[in-house]
Length: 249
Ligand SMILES: [Zn+2]
Ligand SMILES: [Zn+2]
Image (tube, rainbow, N blue to C red):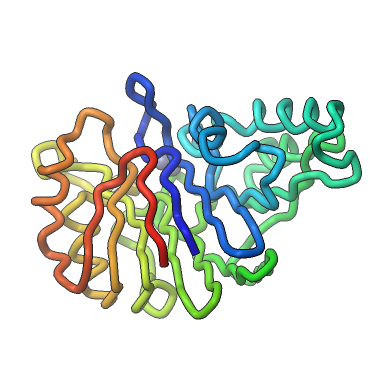
């Protein structure tokens, strides 16, 4: 499994940047996890968008879905141009709530929608995927994703505060993509559905993950400071997200 960071910034993209989006490639399939602002422009550096096999969305906050509409337009035009069969819509897997958001995921022949819950398991090619609801937001669900392929495990933590029950789901993952929204100097006094870089590192260490990718960062954060504040993770390599970063599992 190869992970490519297409976007990692939040809440908005810096100049030339992008909010969350991760391309997952195996021998058989190409999957996009989240589709934030600027992700399509980055995706096009790696493959034509019409070659995607599936898209998974963790939740409907704008930084994770801002490019979904233009993805649908793009796929529609590629179908018109004959580059993607009209009878091959892109399947989108995403929460069923809020309904008003979920309804936007079906678009002409371009995209279809399948709801996800903690009971859902999805197989896309050689990738098996399960979901965990995270501690995030104001009542609408956000799902972390566990992807298994060829004996390797990748966990994408989506957005999460400190209340998520990670044990079992993320334990001993070969790679944990975990949000670290705050550096110490601007960590809010009360948890607000996000983790700091330091908390992400402590979490990954307690779960015995084998490597850690800290993401969901403000674009102006200094990469060396992110790595420094992630020093609680000593079980394996730690990466600070940047656009174009690739990790092979
Ligand atoms: Zn969010
Ligand atoms: Zn977010």
